[in-house]
Image 1 (cartoon, rainbow, N blue to C red):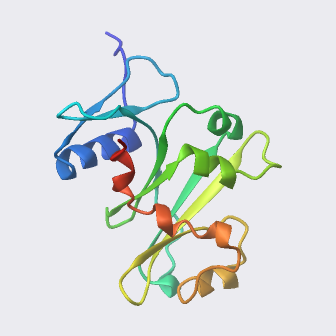
Image 2 (tube, rainbow, N blue to C red; image 1 turned 120 degrees about the vertical axis):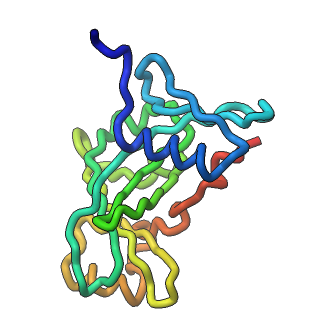
Length: 177
């Protein structure tokens, strides 16, 4: 018997995280693929549902020089981002030590990040680095030279558009009124 639907790893991890860590919420899986992977509602039914698009990547590129890090690689279709009805895109990166990192970017903000020259595929590399102060930072590192990547451990990149740290672990975004 064929399953009516299935969810992929990113959808599962996002839904599981919300259920385990954010007890005021419920997570729903749409029956039809319409560009929204999960709907999040408050248990008390206040506020409107929040539509999430989830993307998953295991960590690539272990590099001892950067210390504790995660590097997720996402191949995205700019046309789907531009026409997305999701409120928030959630990028999940799982490290080799099975630590999960979540980058929650509102769709309107993600659209601003898509290069205008991207027609068919946009490769987004999210590098998450644990700084010397123990705080995690997130950068878009596609196209950076090796020396520039290594410099991220000490200072943010010159191009401010590459610093996505403001979206790292931003679960408060689902608290829309």
